[in-house]
Length: 167
Image (tube, rainbow, N blue to C red; front, side, top):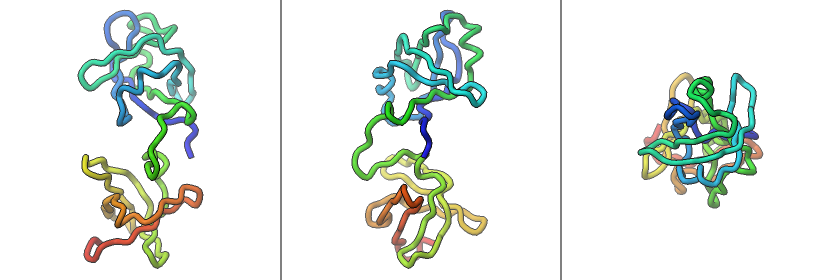
């Protein structure tokens, strides 16, 4: 499992005093208010910053990091990802998972036959859909309780019972 989770991507600067415009990669945009520190993935290295201020502008988060005080300094961080360590991540309800933990899991049918591996998770609003890579093609499996019978992160597997005609 990943030790650090991406919660946003810096897409631009905001103003001239080092504020960053962030596209959130989390379901709960308000979670940014609770952050005291954050990690910025700068060229494959994680750099820790204190969070000075957070505000919201339409669907974006405007964040001010301690030590980033000019437009030039902020612009250097453009396109980098904001991350939190797993301990600082939001607590998920029972039977909910971080998408990054599902990517790469093997998907098996009720007979133990490997269907493929999860390549992506589509968030449709009503329910997620697992994109499963199998034999050079993708199949879409709705993430519904009557289809997804078991998710076992420890053994890197998901057991599904597919309805007739899905594949």
